[in-house]
Amino acid sequence: MKQSILIKNATVVNEGQIFEADVFIHNEFIEAIRPQLDVTKKASLIIDAGGKYLFPGVIDAHVHFREPGLTHKGDLHSETKAAIAGGITSFIDMPNTLPNVLTTAVLNDKFRIASQKSLANYAFFLGINSCNIDEVIKMDISNLIGVSDDGLYFTKKGNLLADNPETMEKLFAICKSIIAIHSENEQIIEENETIYRTKYGENVPAEFHPVIRSEEACYQSTRRAVELAKKHQARLHILHLSTEAETHLFRNDLPLKNKTITTEVSIHHLWFSDKDYQRLGNLIKWNPAIKTEKDRAGLLKALLDDRIDIITSDHAPHTLDEKQMPYFRSVPGAPMVQHSLNIMLELYREGHISLEKIAEKMCHNPAILYSIQKRGFIREGYFADLTLVDLHVPWTVTKENILYKCGWSPLEGMQFKAQVTHTFVNGFLVYDQGQFDETPRGLPLSGRNIF
Image 1 (tube, helix red, strand yellow):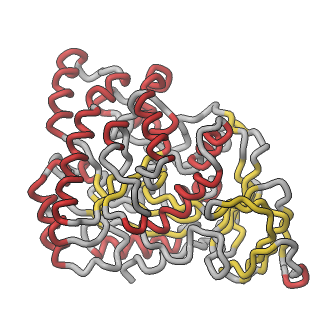
Image 2: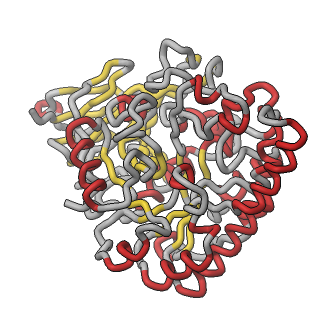
Image 3: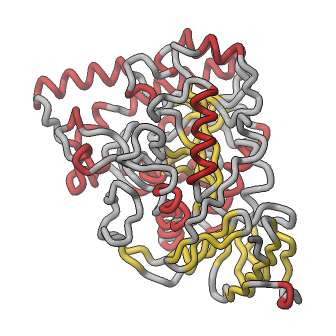
């Protein structure tokens, strides 16, 4: 059943501006955006958004929602429920599910599952490694969101494109789709692992994680990938940048739509630093590692001056038991999708970033970068994917309000000063002040799917 919804008195954050307006939603789309709209009789639901900020729905272009094959950690229903509670209305999922997404048959199966279970809009990367590169090169992948190797190194060593220049160059020379890569040098990491295993055995303190997965391992890998992409004019996207040094490899002298080499920062690299390992240990073990306060500041600076293009969550749920294993067996990654917008709003309150820039990096730019049609902006005729935020409602992250299937967060005990109050997906109010409409409302992100 379709709805006509009037959002009255909203403070709209959109395309570099903040202004007061009413927004009228009819069926799936935004029909009108104007002050004091006279459509009350047409509306089946009226929401007074006085004092609240209306953002475009957040597009999280880097998540690991774990379905199929790893659903004891998370699935497409549980993790999209957490996402919409955090104001995220669309996502792009990585290929390291089981089986890995190395064929269009597996990719199509993920679209099928999402159509039955996802509360948010969805797209999926096709995985690529040395085993399937010849098949991928022969395929017409122009309708894909992109190809990626992210997470596939868990299957076996040698699956990182950035660590295989011959494979990477072969792909860059032919593939014109977005190629999104995890950029670390495995040889440097393995040499560092040997040093610390010799000293500590299996129980390496977590504080050495950024020394093992070092700045050098990241920088050398990213520099080589960027050089090869320039050589072949490939469409390269570097995932989850983690060092200040790497930010200088990227440009900000042309608009995003004209860039061929782009990058992102994940929320944990903007929030945590190496000083947090003593308190949180392996709970904040990510690959690439959270590094120094200097790196955190450098990433934020590059985000603000547009060398970094988008913000992602790299949401990666694992069970608490998996995280609390000794260092070499503790799996990297943590759940963040429910809290990523809240973290950015906290950085806004601290004076580090504007609301307009948050909308640009979390909503507008992912839509531009991945050519997602009619989403990411508050515009008439666009899908009504919207997020309403109250900047003056403090709340604390507790086990009781964590929605991830894995049931924990490294942010537990954190008090946020702003709260997502309403989330709209394709014109439906799917989250209303803690209450959910759990009917799957998500659609494949138009123009970028297999069907």
